[in-house]
Amino acid sequence: QVQLVESGGGLVQAGGSLRLSCAASGSIFGINDMGWYRQRPGKRREFVASITSNDYTNYADSVKGRFTISRDNAKNAVYLQMNSLKPEDTAVYYCYANAPSYDYWGQGTQVTVSS
View 1 (tube, rainbow, N blue to C red):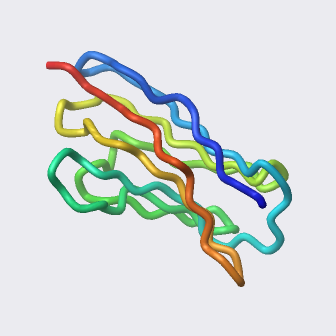
View 2: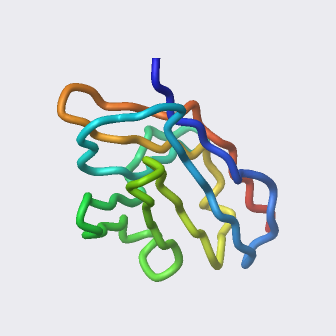
């Protein structure tokens, strides 16, 4: 079964940067949107950013101007460049891929921002 595999999380100081990557372990036909959600401690999972197959992007207000999403359709991959990180960005980040018959999710990667 095809899975989304994430990498790039870790511990960083406030003001620093991280780049998250997410790639499919196999071929997924007809992916539409790809993107990222996050779940902060004690909070519900929330939308972070998305990108369509023709590169239209959308961001949560809390990350606009700091995070940049991109994708590589040939690799079924999506990326999240996170700059000017804040302690409130601390969360488990999940990638997703929306396909016609199924929504795929990654297992999550921890991002911790220290003050």
